[in-house]
Length: 137
Image 1 (cartoon, rainbow, N blue to C red):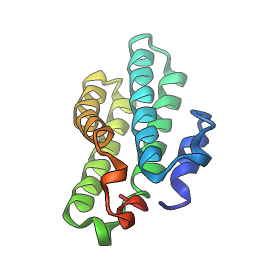
Image 2: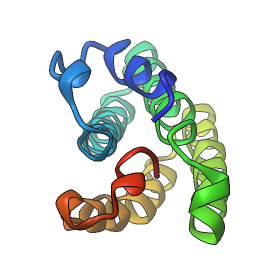
Image 3: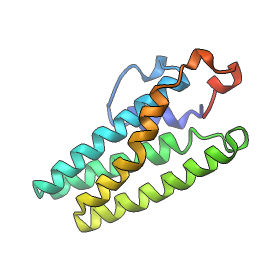
């Protein structure tokens, strides 16, 4: 796991257990943090809270960009890592759109794309993975 992923999570004061988290757990924490920020952003759009909306969407983009994206190992992750990279790029574009246009549907779209991956990731038993797969996605 690259050293930037924990920083993306802790920059937003989302949890103090990051330093002791395994790479697998860190990705779970990042997905959970992203979902939390997306829920908050949608709420801020609905309440017309412009500054809070912008801050939470920026936070969500940081989790994707400095956490999930940097956690990818494109060499070992192969096609799956490449597809996740493309998905993360797309999600960031949709979040920027949501921010500019107060578009809750764009946020819902990102939730619909990321949440199944988050759930699947949580279903992985890290102890069942070969030891080199514990290191990175």
